Structures are given as C-alpha cells and as structure tokens.
Length: 236
Image (cartoon, rainbow, N blue to C red; front, side, top):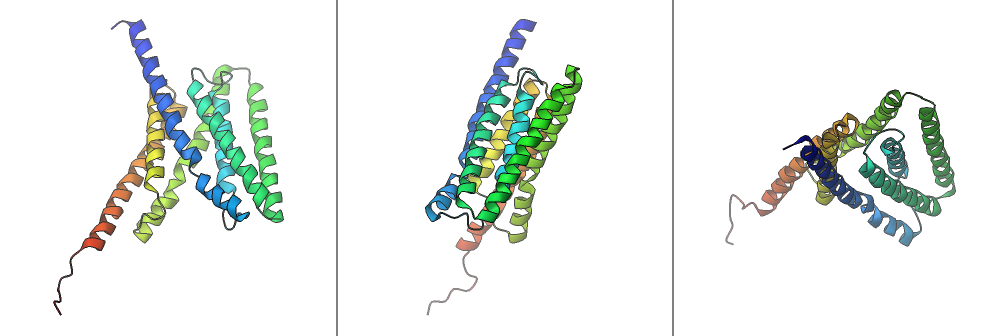
C-alpha cells in the first residue's frame, strides 16, 4: 500500500468514526426529552436542575470552537456534533427558563449570560494568539479539560449504583450510547492524531465500559434474586 492509498484509507476511517460518533451523540442529545415533556405538561420544573444543561452547553461551545479551522485541522465532525449539541442544550435551557419560578429564572439567565461571556472571552483571547501551535494548545487544553469533566460525571452514578446495588438510576441505553459515542470519537481522534480528542474520549470509553459492566452485574443479580427458589418449600 502506497502513502496516498494509506492516507485516503485513514481519512475514510476517520470520517466513518466521526459520523458514527455524531449518530450516537444524537441519542444522548434527545435523552432529556421525556423530562422536558413532563416539565411542559406540568408547567413546572419541579425538583429538576438546569445546571447539567448549562455545563453541557459550555462543553459543546468550547469543543465547537476547538473544532474550527481557526484552532485545529480536519475536525469537521467535532464541529457538527457540538453545534447540534449546543443547539439542543440551548433549547432545553430556554424551556427550563420558561417553566421555572422567578428565582430560578433569574439564576438561569445569569448563568446563560456568564456562559456566553466566558466563551466569548475564550474565542477573543485565543484569536489574539498569533502562533497557531500555541493557540491550538491553549484551546486544546481547555477543550480537553471540559471533556474530561463531562466524562467524569458518570462517576457519581457509578458510586450510586455500587452503594444501592441497583441499576435503577443508570438507564442501559443511555450508558450504551455514552460508551459508543466515546469509543467512536476515541477512534476519530486516533485516526486524526489529535490527543485533545482521543485522550478525554478514551477516559469516557473506559468509564462507559465500567458502567456497562456494573449494569450487567447488578441487573443479573437482581434477576437472580427475583427468580431464586426458596430453600424450604411448603406444600401446605
């Protein structure tokens, strides 16, 4: 295989991994919809928190900026997945603001303003860095840190599953989508030789495997408990 053919094959593999990552990410983006259907039906946010959507919006916007040609190269799939993700999170935040009480409304509006201000500062600040490599490192570390913090969020669920010995609060399909998306972008980053993509998604992949393993273990145990025969059978 000559160099040209190898590069074409590598580019094709990268695109396939990126498209797969976009598809699996879409499953994650639509997962809060049942929650928001309930919020709109009850016209109240009840005890739900809007902070996860704020964090997700920050992550999507920083990673979207990292994926642009101003910062990195050949990261179109990062731009598409994070632009779609940012749109979903913004819609969720707007719906949350519309249905929450006045106190939370003002809090969420203030946080939304902070998000756009911080991201605006990152964009403006990075564009002031004349050296492309330094600019790439600057935004890359921010993007990597943001992704790692998002990848670490399942640790709370993992801890809860271990403590309660129940998978009630860890939906299987959500865990599976998270794993598949992280694995896809792990491959995407490897094919693109981009450590700021494959390192955080590698962490996400490992945590996804842990979640799936815990789900299988505790789900199997719960089934075994339900179907276990009694030691002494009464025929009264």
